[in-house]
Length: 151
Image 1 (cartoon, rainbow, N blue to C red):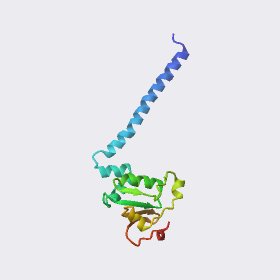
Image 2 (tube, rainbow, N blue to C red):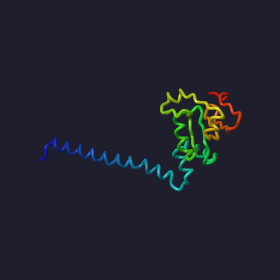
Image 3 (cartoon, rainbow, N blue to C red):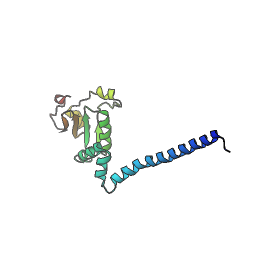
């Protein structure tokens, strides 16, 4: 006869094994469901499902020439990093002094509004702003005054 303690231990081990197998099945269902939701869709539709911001930024980037220089004013961390990624190969910058902006506090201290002369000298062709009133785009041309568009 098998002692009661060993039977209970065997039952617990079997229960743990069954739980592990069921959790594997539950864990595999999430990627399977995601894969099925993307099946048969083109790149733009998949991008819209997985990352709506990426789809919107790609659509916006397609409106600029491949060799455009874009200066982003009043940057926000998430938006700046994604703009650099989705606008590639276009040059996107937020600084005139090569300062590094990594944290929300550093972005909150941003104060680098260039003159149109500086923008032309450094081969920027557009200025972009994602402020509360929406997206604003200015072509770099003589007489452009960005200080009047303060946050």
